[in-house]
Amino acid sequence: MRFGMNVPIFGEYADPQLLAALAVEAEDSGWDGFWVWDHLQWSGEGDGEPRQPSVDPTVALALIAAATSRVRIGPMVLPLARRRPAKVARELATLDHLSGGRLTVGVGLGGPPGLEFGDFGEETDARVRAAKLDEGLAVLQGLWSGEPFTFTGEHHTVREAQLLPPPLQEHVPIWVGGEWPRRAPFRRAARFDGVHPLMFSVPPDEQPAALAQLVRYVAQHRTGSGPYDVVFGGDTVGDGGAADRALVGRFADAGVTWWMEGISHWRGPLVAMRERIRRGPPGP
Image 1 (tube, rainbow, N blue to C red):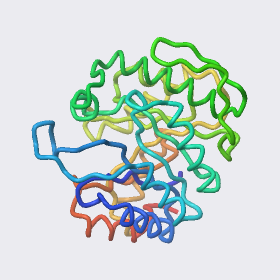
Image 2: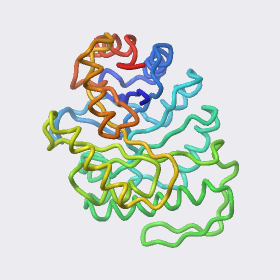
Image 3: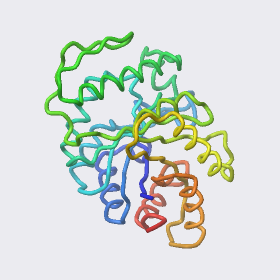
Image 4: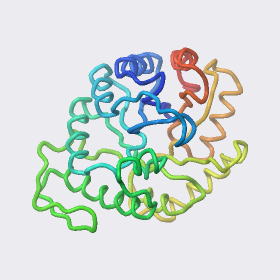
């Protein structure tokens, strides 16, 4: 198992230099990955609450890439339905070069729909956003081939475009997010390189069993035979104790390959989260 974290870009974290400093501290402390959220705006716990300051994830990731040398980095999750996939393809290919080939991209529908889509005149319907996501992923991978690429869909069209240079990595891993036990996002995830599920409706003590069920479901729908990541986690102390080892072990037994430590405003203030990063991952 490898160990990473997915860090907000708003509130106390709305500072690219701070995010880069946290990524350096994570790398120095033995973590394997550092991802950032992707939001245009944030308003506390719901759409009606006051807006919080935020920063652009791609700009922040460029600074993170330049400041680090080992950890894998990327957005988690990138709501491709509200982005132009050709522009995303260029941004992320550049980021992959800047990082020396350390990019792993998390994608999903994105949310909340009102804040992320509706406030900007974008479609909020989940089915439409899902269709845009699927088309966007096809465009992303087609352009990343570095070969002339043509695509005609309901939402996107590409005519003999060629993105040069392609990403440094021959294959940029794509992890797909979704909320279990909904099935459609995980049929999508089965076509790519990994899955990062949310389990808001599953009690914590039932999550390892639910993850094992999810892993079996994805395996039934996979067509490829390459490496596949299952990304999930929670809150650990980082003291090397038996409780941390037992918690991580239950998820490893369920099939989790990347532990994603809970680093966010929901867990505690920035100073406490920074100390948790410095303690290092909850396993070897």
